[in-house]
Image 1 (tube, rainbow, N blue to C red):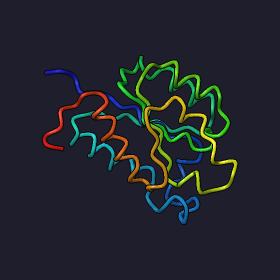
Image 2: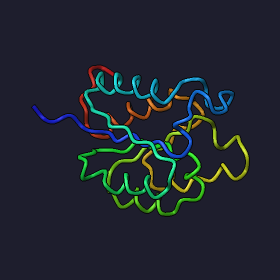
Image 3: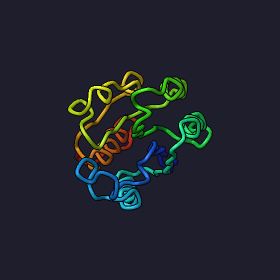
Length: 154
C-alpha cells in the first residue's frame, strides 16, 4: 500500500488566537477545534496532516523550507498578515516545488486596501478566501485531487 500523502497545514501570525480574536471577522472556532476537524477530514480523504503555527515570520519561512524534508506532498497555508508583505515567505513557498493552496478565513479583497494584496497567491495553485474556517476543508479536498488521492464518486 502506498504511503498516504502528507499535507503540512501552516497558520501564520495571530491564528493561535482563533475563536477569541475578532470573532466577528474570524468566527468562534478555535485553532484546536479547526485542527481536530481537519484531521478528521484528511482521514476521510486518505491523507495525513501535520499542523504548524507561528507568530514569527522567520519561523514560518523555516517551516516552509523544511516541508519537503518532513515528507509533505503539499502545503495548505493561511499566511495571515504575512500575506501582504513577506517576500521571504513567497520565495520559500516557490522554492519548495510543492503544491500550495492559500486560505483566508475572511475575504481579504473586501477588507482594508492593504489586505487586498497577496504575495502568496502568485505562487499558489489556488486561493480560497472568505468562506470562514470551511475554506480549510475545501483546500484539503482540492489538494487531495492535486496529489492524486483516489476519490470514490466525488
